[in-house]
Image (cartoon, rainbow, N blue to C red; front, side, top):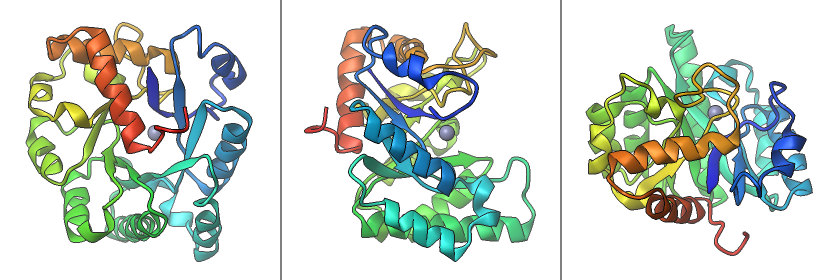
Length: 256
Ligand SMILES: [Zn+2]
């Protein structure tokens, strides 16, 4: 199994232990996700030391306010490093702050990074929180920069937006929150099976029945099982699809 989205540099756990146990936990590979320039640099260092860890580079919308041109230039310098497999996580997050200047700044940094990804032929991992409409509009407007793949990470927009993101050719990556008790999972069967990925977003969003605990990459299997059940597939069969989709999206085929 592959965890398509993990924050391995979190101080909530010991990543050495997680990496040492990967094989026993059934994990072939973990995609570490960058959220700031500093975090992206550390992610590359971690990936360089561990064959089965790959990493993304990007400025999360929560850090958009402090994204200077200098930082973006430094970020660009990281994009050709060998273990970097995507630009992310980038996007919009209106959950805590949603006044107009902040929204504008987030949009500007988001679009800048979409263009960077295109320049380096990298896919993008998108963070979308309380901002689906704006994300959709930006993706539509910037479609010419999206030739290398788009992943809607922690997809939580349900049926309402699934069709629109599907029509843009997006991948849908699911986190522990798709396992939560009151969540509608019925739309999963309408998604293309070759566009579904699973992730943990650890240390956040532990799946049921571990909800509220510190999440870890190995818990990706719990989320996979829940989706397999909804799709009336065996876990093994679903795993074949999701692993292949993740390898395809991050271009890992000859790397692991
Ligand atoms: Zn994340």
